[in-house]
Length: 75
Image (cartoon, rainbow, N blue to C red; front, side, top):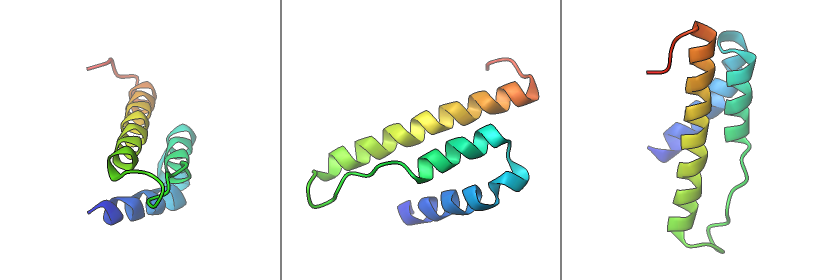
């Protein structure tokens, strides 16, 4: 499932400029190109926590961009 999510993000960033706003595409590219901790140098929970924080932050940014693009109020 994790690998599927990674590939979906890569796919979205490659075709994103055709269907996403420039700002949203920039956020997805940042997520795709984020720095990664090394598996053999860090405990798994630190790697997962770092990934979680990147994904959560990106989702919040994309949600804000979508609200602004749609001129919607914060729900």
